[in-house]
Length: 327
Image (cartoon, rainbow, N blue to C red; front, side):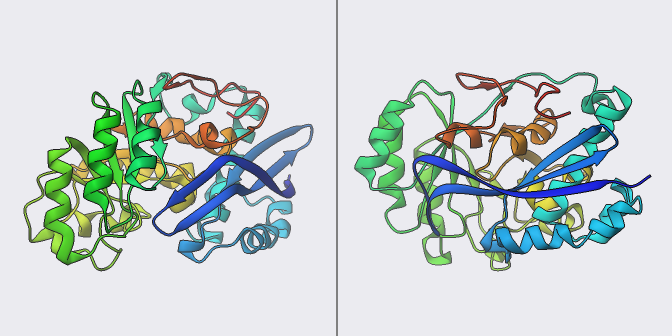
């Protein structure tokens, strides 16, 4: 028996603006996939990312291209060879997990061989801005235990100092989104160490990060744009201390779980990360968060409205998804 496919583009307005080194956005455009098998349905969401050559329309078209294969019964295992890692495969992979849970009556946690899912402490992301803007944002979030601070290159030392002044007790992850350059690397590392930063995410451009293996790293460094799947990890161990696992990069929960195991085998720490999407995109990532050293699953908190029902956030804690949402 095959599967009936539905593909929809959904738009969620962002509360204010979300600004990183490579630009700003005011809405999250996502692709929502529904797989139906008789009366049961499974859903998944992906967030296409232009940095990886993706567009919402292109990803939707790629998913539509599998309609015939799905109708003939192509399953989650077959999917891994039908699409490359990326957003399109992610939406379908997560929809398959959800559908299997609905069909078998077993929660996804059990299907993925977890004992149980626990609530997670998620970071809250602060957009890049002037030091004054970032001080105000940090001051407003000063009680949050973990902040993810977006940086942009020139002026980052001043931004870091402002954020630390605004949130003196919070732990920090900083994310340069490939915006730093080799000449400024040691100075930026020193500023991070002075500010008490826990982790620096993707300071140099992917493929141009060899210097990280040749200098002292006073603060641990996490690969994001440099690492999409488990096959890339071994070659990165000389320059990174951790890896950000995002389902939209790995191509779904299937590869993300395998990537997490490989990262642990190699001695790399793990961040469970996300794009800016709704609770349907975050729900599968809560499984990666179970073994993560840092969790960054605040996407729905950045939206003006979320799906209903959505994930439950109580302050900085995010709870496992209810079956009505996913899994």
